[in-house]
Amino acid sequence: MKTLVIDTATAACSVALFDGDRLVGSGHETVGRGHAERLVPMIADLPGGGRADQVLVDCGPGSFTGVRVGLAAAIGLGIGWGVPVSGYSSMALIAAAAPGDGPLSVAIIGGHGELFVQAFDRHPLAPADALRSLIPAAAIEAVAGRPVFGSAADQLTALAPGIDAHDALPDAARAMLLPPALRALPARPIYGRAPDAKVKGAAATPAIPAGTDAA
Image (cartoon, rainbow, N blue to C red; front, side):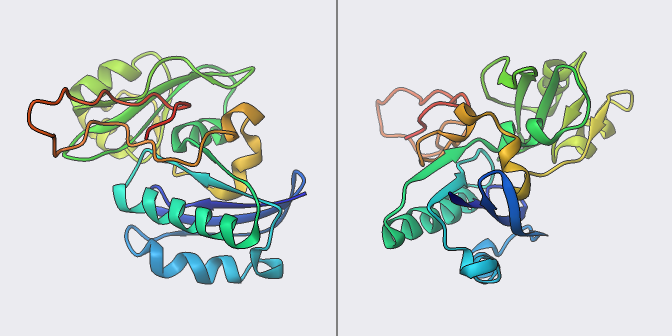
């Protein structure tokens, strides 16, 4: 069974085509912005134009626009090809691809000066706590005692030079490192923080833990 993987949730734009667990083609670029312009050509450059029996997509957290670009493309291809679409968390993929053998934390750039932070255990890989959106000072406390991987590494080390932090972005080519349960999420956005706009009188929306339905 062939699987097309789409990952546009962060500053990286990546795609991969798998035949079973075997990688047959991939592309990865750090674009910052412009995912929509790069994504379709990258899929077209895959063997067979990326045609697959199922589509797997990064649901976030990350860039609001990037998350929605990837989901729109994945769902559109799923409808056009008549194939199922499922999702995974950007945090889980970074954790799955991180070197080492012990517990770790993932921290990536969020919105409004905050960082998305989540801890993971390994063997098997699984979230150790809920996804949170934190100011940098609180993020440093949250990752204490574990190596941390993600796009927030430079920001964390600038504030706490002794922290064990490593820059990383999700890569679609590493998607099969995820346990099956962590790549079987509903194809809906994981925003990781409450929306800025709120209906008058409505309660604030809680942050969505990775592995849950964000919509």
